Image (cartoon, rainbow over the protein chains, first blue to last red):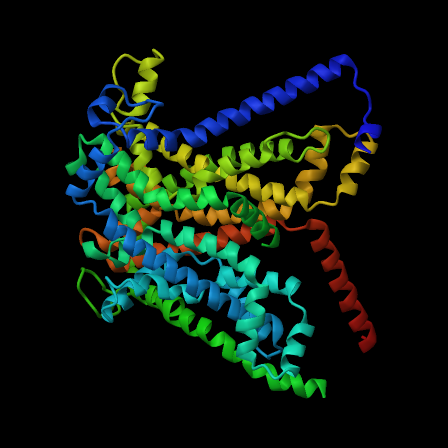
Amino acid sequence: MASNGKVKLSSGAQKLETARLVFIYVVCVILTVLCLAPFWIMLVNSTRSSASIQEHAISFIPSKYLMDNWSKVLKQSFNPFTGFKNSIIVSTCSTALAVYFSSLTAYAISVYEWKLKNAFFSFIVGVMMIPSQVTMIGFYQMAYKFGWNNQLFALFLPAIASPMMVFFMRQYLQGALSHEIIQSARIDGAGEFYTFNKIVLPIMKPAIATQAIFSFVSSWNRLFEPMVLISADEKKTLPMMVSLLKGDTYKQEFGCIYLGLFLTVLPLIIVYLLLSRYIVAGVALGSVKG
Amino acid sequence: MGKKKTLNYAKYGYIFSIPFVVAYLIFSFYPIINTFLIAFSDLVGPARKDYNFLTGDIFENFKKVLDNPIFKKAFMNTLKLWICNFIPQMVIALLLTAWFTDTRSKVKGQGFFKVVFYMPNIITAATVAILFSTLFGDPVGPMNDLLKTLGFIDKPVKFLTKANVAQNIVIYIQTWMWFGYTMITLISGVIGIDPAIFEAAEMDGSNRFQTFIYITIPCIRTIMLFTLVTSLIGGLNMFDIPKLFIANSGPNYATYTTSVFIQSKAFEGRNLRNEAAAASLIMFVIIVICSAALFYIMRDKDEAEARKLRKQALKQAKLASKGV
C-alpha cells in the first residue's frame, strides 16, 4: 500500500526530504558519540600506563598495560573482590525476593476476592512514590538499635515489599492469566500454593524476566542505602568503593582509576550487551502500563 | 455455590499478602514513623539508641533547617539542577520521538540508536560521577587534552573549581543519563496511539509539524505527566552524582543538594539526626505538593468538566426526587 499510496514528490521537496534525513542521522551520530565516548575512554585508558595518559589523556587504541594496572589496583585500598562479592549477594538476594514476593502479592490481588483487596491495592499505588530519603533516617535508627547496621540482609530483606514491582506484576497478570487455568488446577486437586508455584509462576516468566533485570541493575547501582547502613570495609558494596578511587592513594595512577571504574560496571556492561533489546523493550512496557 | 467458593478462597488473598505487609510494616512504615518522631526529638550524635522529644519549642528542628542558609542554597541548587536538566532532556527526547515514530519516512538503525541512547542510564551513577570528574580533571583530564589538541586553550582549565562550570557539568551528566530513558518512554506512548488518527490527519493535509503538535503530543499527555512526576521525584532526591562528583560539593556548595544535606547532616560531623529528619520531611511535603499540583495542572480538563456536570445533574435529580 505504501508504494501505491505514495504521492510523487517534486524534486525540490525530495531534496528537502533528503536534507532532513541527513540532519537526523548527523544528530543521532553525534548523540551516539557523546553516549559512548566516556565509556570508550574508560575502557582504553584502563589498558594504558599512567605515564602515557599523562601525556595524552585521549587515545583510541588500547595499550598493553592492563595487567600492570590490575596488579597496582589490588595493592591499594580498593578491593574489587570484596565489593564484587557483597554486591552480588545483595543484588541477587534482593532480586530473587522482590520478584517472588511481588508476584505472590500481585497474584493475591488479582485472583482472589477479599474484602480489603481494593484498599490494599490503592495503598500500594499510594506508597509507590515515597522516596527512600524519607524512610532512611528512621530505618537507620531502628537498624542501629537492633544491631542490623553492617549486615547485608538489611540491604536486601526490604525488597520483599516492592510496591512498584507489585503494581507491574498485577498489570501483567490481569492480561495474561485466565481464571479457567486456576479452576482446572483446583479441580485436579492442586493446593493454592502449589498452583501459584507450578502453574502461575511459569506463566509470569516474561514479566519476571524484565522485572528481574531492572531490579538487579537498580540494586547493583544503589549508593544511598549502603552508604548509610554500612561502614565496615569488608561489607562495602562496589558503588561505595568507587569513591576510594578518587582518594590520595591513586592520585597519579590514572590507569588504575580507569580500570577500577571499569571493574565496577563490567557486570552491567555484560548484562546490557547480552540483553539490551529486552531491556529497552522492558522500559517501554513498564511506562505504557504505568 | 459460586459465592461459597469465592468465600472459601478469600483467605488465600490475605495469606499471600502477609509477607509483603509484614516486610512493609518493618522496613518502610515503621521507619517513616520513626523519621517523623526523630524530627521532633533531641537525637544528636552517632551512637545513641534512644531519643527524647523536645520539651521546649517542638518545631525547633524544622525552624533550624528552614533558617539554615546552606539548606536554602541546597534547595535552590536542587531545583536548578533538576529544571536545567529536565528541559533539554525533554526537548531532545521529543525530537527523537518525532523522528523515530514518523510514518512517512523510517529512520534506519533505530534499534541501535535506542540501545546506545539508553546505555548511560543503566551504568552505576556513582561510577559515572567519578568517571566524569576524572574526564574533567586537570591538568591531565581527557577534556583538557581534547580542548588543547583542538587549539581552544593553551593551559589546562581547572573545571571543577569554578562553581558555574561544576553545576553545568552535573546538569550535563543528568541530561546525558536520562534522555534515552525519556525517549523510549515517549516512543512507547506514541506506538500506543491508534494509527487511524495519523492516517486521518495525513488525509486532511496536516504536515509533520502540525501532526506532532496537535495530535501526537496531546495523545501522549499522560505519559509525559508520568515522566514529569517521576523525574521530579528523582530530581528532588538527587544524591549519587552530586555526592561523588566533587569532594565536599565543590566551590561554594555549588553541587550541594538537599539529599546530600540530609545525608551529611545525619551521618557526618555532629550527626544531627533530628535536623536531618526534619529536612527529609520538609522535602517529602514539597514533593507531595509538587506532584499533586502537576496532576492537577495536567488533568484532562474536558473529563473533569464532564464529571462536574454529571455530579451537578445527579444532585439535582436527588433534590427533585426528594421533592424539595
